[in-house]
Image (cartoon, rainbow, N blue to C red; front, top):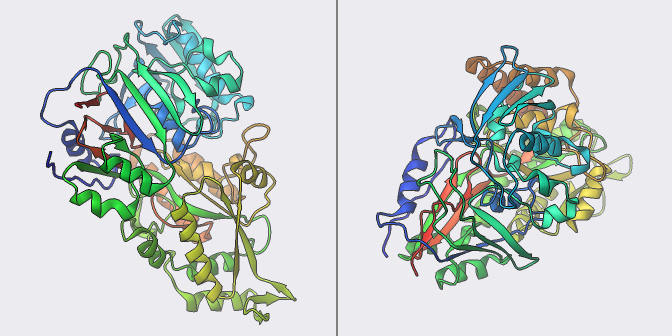
Length: 544
């Protein structure tokens, strides 16, 4: 089938609305959906846990979107709509949300969905024992849920939270069976139970997750293209880490959809008449290296800016990603509500300025290898590289290493297991921590840069504010942005928050996260869920 390719940038959020609807229509095709069959989906990263409440990384929410429903939905215009909750009221002070729930929903273990289930889920996310860095981090304001009747739940917050409904739409806060949540964390990680269009059958670690259709499903969100059970009988969610192997499997028709389409394969995908390509930027904080301000050398803003100015990120992106990934220069991605483009040039490559800043900071000596020194100590920084870091990301940091070396800074790429990275981060034993944060709200700035998030999420968890930045005025600014529903005031305050974060050089931002799907001619109706631009296969079908 010779089908034109549609590239979508950015994601459909409040600031980037138009292209996504076209992509969804394009992916659905003009032929009628067919019932049955198996869709094989291949991605690069395996989740550490299938319960997205635990920890909370993107591989979890991609697969969980297939078997968990959310309390509310978000459409391609960024508007909140019903889902498991049919309606809600917010108290004038913004502290109480009363949700009226559907009465016909059942989890796949037979447990009914009701107000007790809402309470159990929010309590689970907020419980430190869950180690819910993402979902729990989003609802730090949560104080409890009162069950008013079987299908009415009143949620109380400690402070007003304008982004509450927005985060409830995300798959990270997907609703699970309260019966299943009573199991151990490890059991629930292995086989979470939702009310979604598919259910988890088995997880063959380092190979695949098998999902089968939920035949009773009849409560899809209004953003869906149909109602009733999913078209597919089965989904095989495979893990193929090597990018070239993943793309070759797509071209050969061995898999129907691949995620994380490697940028070096974009052009080949565009030329292949059997392959469609969907690309959408995700909202939130771009891919980055966050500086640890709690110890030298990055406790000095001059050294932070010098590092940023000595890193030729644009050159590295062109080399490593073939020009397919744009530079992200500010603390928010383009697809994030209230994003401002005023800070995109704040991290431009300027080695002359970097040299002046390092001289001002006292790093004026040079050792035998050409690295800068001060009081006999080499200017050195360690960046933590986890085992699941994509090879291209490692290459990007190797190129940053090469250009910062020209400024006289030794950058050590310390590769280790993901568990070691978490332990090192929890102990503040690093200079640079790589990462990103995908979310559909600019409130991400509060999560990654304010003092409320310096402490880890539960015993053994990690802190979301990995810079250690602590400024009461900045905390108050972001709290005030959450305390108002006035869009104009929120825009103004989030502009100020972006401005301050950029001026403090808390991160070296590199490129915005994106969803990049390659779709073989056998698959149709593959869409992106609007809140986070993750794959949504409820409307998908296959003809093979």
